[in-house]
Amino acid sequence: MTTDMTIEARALSKRYGGTVAVDALSFSVRPGRVTGFVGPNGAGKSTTLRMMLGLDSPDGGEALIGGRAYARLDDPLGTVGALLDCEALHPGRRARDHLLWLAHYSGLPARRVDHVLDQVGLAPAARKRTGGFSLGMRQRLGIAAALLGDPPILILDEPVNGLDPEGIQWIRQFLKGLAADGRTVLVSSHLMSELQDTADHLVVIGRGRLLADTDVGELLAEVSGARLALRTARRADAMTVLTGAGATVAVTGADSLTVTGLAAEQVTALLGARNIPFSELARHRATLEEAYMELTADMTQFRAQEPSSQVPSSQEAS
Image 1 (cartoon, rainbow, N blue to C red):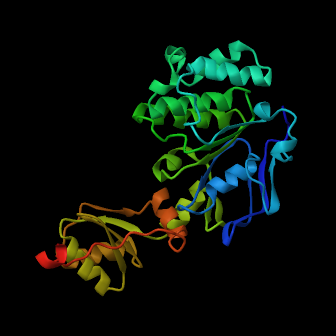
Image 2 (image 1 turned 45 degrees about the horizontal axis):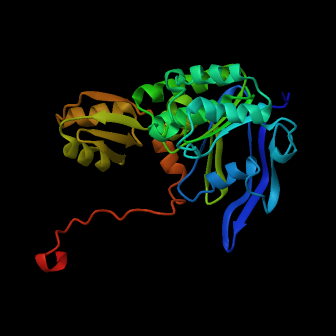
């Protein structure tokens, strides 16, 4: 097992024809924490992970696992465990046999197979054929395969995809436990709510470039800024009064707003003077999804149109 458990991208670049998928991307993933790896569709996440695992060759720079390129690792399965595609299963093969095949190839004992099946909660389904597995069960089997060599480094692409609420709760605690053991955990996901409850650190990319490499708590504090969360049944009246006083006001719900540019005491005084009741006024705590949207606002490749406020005529609709 390697003593260097860092994942590194050093000026990593990849081009497909005239398209730059990854553009001089550099970041490090340290042990002892869960690092979220996020970005819009087409940002280059999958390409980056594939280069880390030696499945694609970079056009420039390098990707290192424990200080070495994946192809030069002495014991790949015992160094890094990866889940990129849970669909890469033979439907006629039983779950335990699938893992036994991987274990035999890497010189691992059968007892290790039984151990990881138990770890991911698949022991009761060990002798079932994977063709009958749900997506969530296939995800668990993929995670079991990643854990087979007991690696200090894990790279998981969308590990909660297809999991039910119980499964999501399980993977959340499981990843935290792996990091607490001192392992290096890199998780690519599009579910910001899950990363907010799981990740300690965040790497955000857009159009192949690094947008942020930051502690999750620090990022949320920065995005929260001096905004206030206000809840009132007279939302429209409150917006009129507060914007008239120079505040920036954003609607966040049927009866809720965020207010920037005024102190809480000023908001209270302004609403009180106009007899506008409110049930809540507190410092706004941004979600990871808000922070992500701010960071990637100009990087989204595919964006839906805003709904039209006009109803088409019958001729236009036909």
